[in-house]
Image (tube, rainbow, N blue to C red):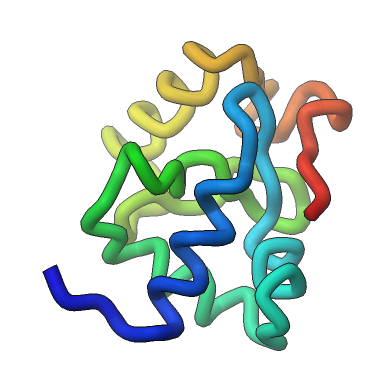
Length: 105
């Protein structure tokens, strides 16, 4: 699978998010020196290495669940919530329930 240098940078940073924690697209962008959380989201949208690259651990800056594989509702979001719950990260009405689960690089 061929990925761009930018995607590889995003994926390597994403792998640093510990199990049981999440980060935001904005914090991930800042960690790699990128000014665009949306660019990070686009790279994660087409992540061919999931779950080794745990893109499910990235949420919106408002601490809402965000998207997953290009979807913002439906089965993919349910799958993201299930994956995070299995790691001990919980959401209430699609908002991060415990801010202590927020990982900062």
